Image (cartoon, rainbow, N blue to C red; front, side, top):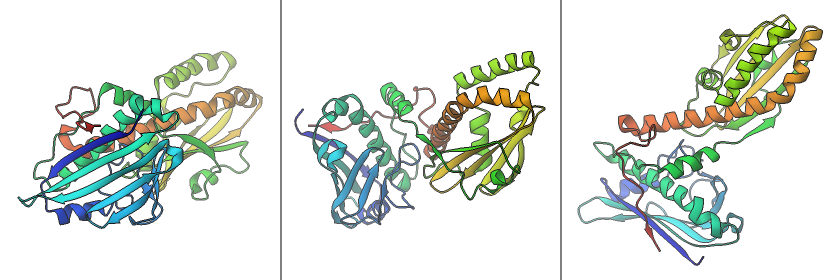
Length: 341
């Protein structure tokens, strides 16, 4: 594959100076242009300026040229598999409005030769159209009809859900740390908290435990069917009732005849951490936990990852308004329309 040229542009109902101010927030904590939280956030290691380094998801780049309020160019890192740049340009129009243009000019290398047409380009087109929607939405009297994600893009987004990873129990998880004296098991997993997603720990707890993946539900039903055979009481929905909370953290759990457990959700600016604390009571509890602990990390990671994905989509749909695009694929929005070269 040779050089790729890909251009998206939108007329924004605002002066170029106002659109330039919007552009200046890109990659920062107050970013109003990037389509958060639907997509992995753009993060830079400093305010938007020449030399700033960062990226979004696996695509890494640095700011190689910057004309404040008018133009910013990002040069791809070699490990991104693209040799070239992408840039955003603001141009004033004679009628007082502005043209916002995003352009990519790059040569794919290595595996990116295959990934670009199959996955990266459709995802790129969707991200940029959502970004342009954001720019128009910031100034339009009536919000634009959101760009429509294709079926293929929706499938690709599922495979790109936020990743979970094991981590130490955070110092800030005070409810989890104080749950038991001398617990027999303590473990934690964390997932990225995307800008714009919910900061309410109870909403995260509900998303994790009240709306788990179907395969987790199947395991829970199997558990309920089998535990009675070995003299362990069934848990029921009350197992994940809220016991206590504070602004950043909520604690759930229950006490049973064989073990007591607590689960904490701690929501921070850039991460959400789920901590599990278990206290075993007797031989049945030890036997039960010896089996369950093998599946526990897989189940927790699956539930946390799904919750992060669902809450990000919910927040993005809310940002898009009543015309929100994503539920059933029959939305009235427009398809991404880049010019390819």
